[in-house]
Image 1 (cartoon, each protein chain N blue to C red):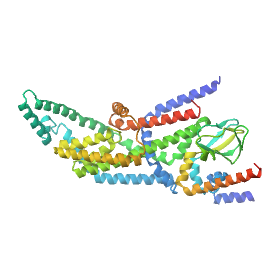
Image 2: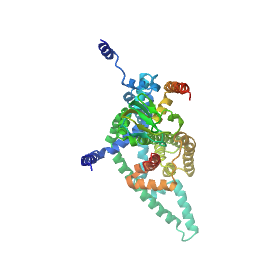
Image 3: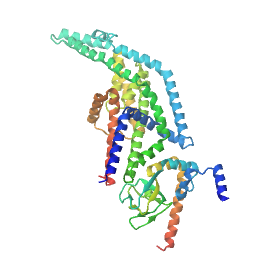
Image 4: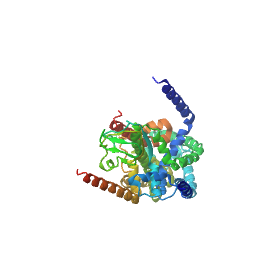
Length: 353
Length: 151
């Protein structure tokens, strides 16, 4: 037995373990920077092939993105803050979200009046009383909702440094893209080199394509929903549109969340029943365009997961890490599944397993 | 005197580090910028004598450009030596290796992924045409050589 070899590998293992412990806090930064890099990589490569050095290409793209964000902020952020405040006021306890407030909404008032008429005609039905109880339990849930959202917002605000660090890490990942790949593959022994190239290539194409497609789809659905909701006269259209776009990441259930948000906004605004139908119809048309035009062209293939599996994954994501994990859990599980399948197939073909 | 001249010339016009790839026939016609793009995708690999590079039936993904040493195909078949390319024809034939390659001596080679190369060619068609011309020239030379042998 070669003791010196064992001692060296033991030492290497300890060093790696120490490095993992030391760098554990930056893993999340690194993953976020990788996501950002995968989205921008094709544009940087495109510029590189047109004689623009990678560092300059990254700087040019950063300036473009910063310009777009600045334009969007100056144009929409004040409106979005107003719209957010309106929604919070509507849902917060201080705004008086009690059964009596809800009953002032014309549509609810009509339904309540009808229930009282039924009570008068059918003794012992108590439809009005039951409706008040249902409204009370619903308002209890809604009163807790802003606190939940605010808790998440405070953590988002606390992560400002995170947001500013990501582009910096991404800059180096994008600039030295080829060097990093070479370094990673340089660690592989000759036996696993070709396999590693295939897996890395598959990872690049699957993850990169998926992330870029998702980003484009979020923007497309967000824009279409904002326009559609503005046309039908729903209040806070940009905020609801953006929320619908982000929720759209979750297959099957995401589109319903966007639609429900639009319909409930009209409901709490006291809009007539017909406006709710228009809002639902507008969101349905957006989904039809998305499913038949945007998704097939941009993403190409749908996430081939059973709805039950999607539901369980979303629930597990929610329990594990809240709203953010609910959004990313389905794409993440799908991508991991795809990569494991590629790894398994290639390990078989290279006769390693 | 010649050495002095070479030194003076190298000070004026530094030889590109990417020029090493011009020794391979398929990259001969490429300009410095195209070679720079190729360099971004190349990986340096070292093989010990007797080491297997790949076996029949393995998935075909990597093309090797032999910088130094010799490789034997199918144990006693064709020998691939310095400045020759291994796996280039497989690039156009299929997704599996058609032979087993073993290093006869210590080998130093550049490796490039088929997907990366094809993606680059797709993005730079002019470069693809240059490479295609070089491959056709190689095939024609090989055909003439085989014909001269009377096979």
